[in-house]
Length: 128
Image (cartoon, rainbow, N blue to C red; front, top):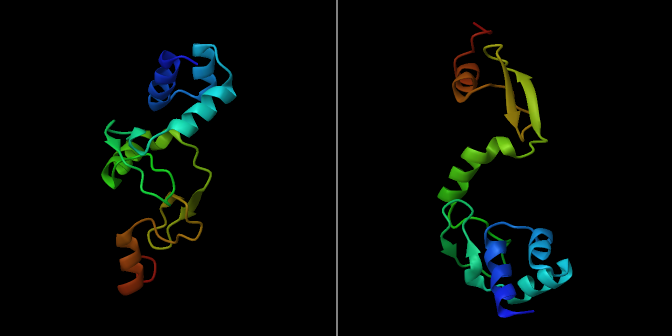
């Protein structure tokens, strides 16, 4: 493998290319590309998915994709609809009766914090 190919593997991988696409582009085996990248990836090679800033991966933690929580939340706010959400549930609010969807919680009762407080502390719209 030439120095050019090595540099291209690191560059293309940092831009989000898959091992298969890189191997096809450089006319190398997928396993060659994968093993080179995993063996030679430095801690400073990580690039934030949102802002492109280089950051250091802390040891003994799950691989990070973002340099900060702020970048992570901004990216998810922009790309949230592009991801598969398997845990979306439909409910009817016990306070106001409005239908709503919630992600990740199958036991929701209220559509908003306002309805929760109204039902919990003031008797709610349906219990007056």
